[in-house]
Image (tube, rainbow, N blue to C red):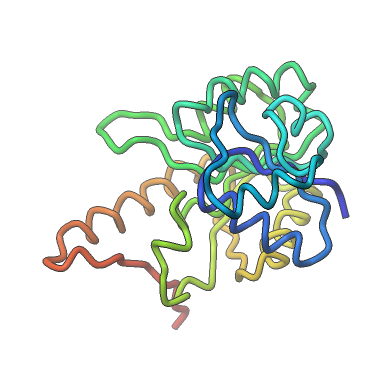
Length: 205
């Protein structure tokens, strides 16, 4: 299996990293400049000198990159990916844009900067605060999309390796639909009187 970098300081980044490391995958966490390591789990990672690195170094040493960062870090990450010849890397966007009329989805914005055919969307239905958003462990699936090539087949295996059912959502342009799907569930959650987290499940009949 390839070396992977998981970029971001989110709970989702740590969760995916833990799952892959539990499968024996070599994982490097990429964090932003000035990131303060206060959480006990990050402190444990930091003791392993090759596990927590600045974004640039994490990108350079990895063949597969999962983007799990806050939106204000995306531009920096895209600039670094451009410098690192990202067309040779498999890039998976796990983020969601800010909700609002007429706003472009994150994955489309990333592709405008990077180009190439190795950019995919996956895990965004979980949200950056996962697993806090799913305390009962109900979410068992994630949706992914991108151009049909050998890396898309590999992404399906990466998703399954993380313990989720991989549901193919089609071509790259459907990344916008996957983000809309996330925003809809958030809107429904906010409408609930007890502010419960809501999740969708795909059912075939």
